[in-house]
Length: 421
Image (tube, rainbow, N blue to C red; front, side, top):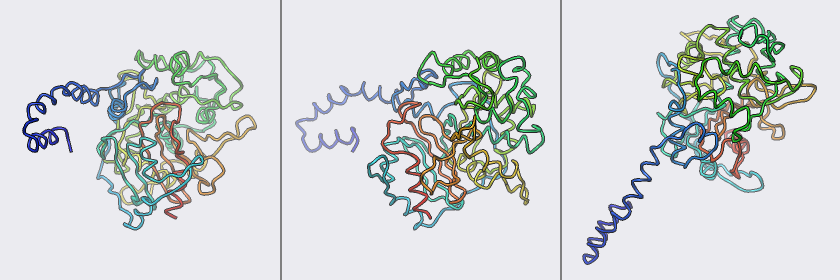
């Protein structure tokens, strides 16, 4: 029962309280108005990376990521590819999931609530087994990818190799990004870049204003063309290329410079022409830029709908082959995702990172061969080829680089996989 109907009931049942009821409503009106205003407010970029947003502001900001930085449009095209839906019995299996995580028992509803899930879509054998929208979102909501965009950018590198625009994954990055010549990236290969194994020193701490990631954010806010490549070029070296793994959003931004240098097209245009206009997407996407008309930011800032992220996941599940105009067409080299989604050997050590994708940690056999794209604040695109399973999770968790939930995403994904076997 809402506030208005509650007052009407009180006035009818207790006539002598009518004046009090009338006076009582205005007393709360300012608070109600402030709450409504907050639900429409947007955070600034520094607020986002500090994790200092009211929950309603966070949701509104993540739904309007194109307000944070300039964007290019990733155009869709052709007929929308509709999803088939799994049987009611299959869908019921998801709703009945129970599992353990970090020593506690949970179910589907715990996961949605504790992990502040805004959207969840599960595809099994290409059919929707579960689709849900929370926190005021809908199928039309564009939600920010954060670092899930890195994995999409990695896929575009694969496409450029397939097209012969990048001759070899072992080519030097400077062959395609002239602005990096004469600096710390001179001996770094495309493979090193995709593995985040350039050996270049980097601090990714989101909430520390002194970190490289926050200095990069300052450059994004300044919006000066060429500033990101110039900053990366002058960083110090921590080790030889291929010997040290260091997670770096700055490095992933250079992947955007690589793609644009190799294809001679804006990042968003290349994504549109290669995939977005050919996968039956429902809506255009948006992608952040370094500056108006500047370099696409490959490491973050793609905004798309839950269903369109899932369509991309299905493309990955099918090893980068799409059906176009009645024929099968390979977009990336055969076996690209098997390589991109597995752990790599860096400096003689196994590192649980692929080509801008995260392999699932060893331990649970249900995850064998599975990998995922991951973004801060709880964004996930889980791909399990053996189980023919895609799970996309869009979330609004409290902080960028800390998981405050007792429910581990991997444990939930494993429970879904087992329930749908």
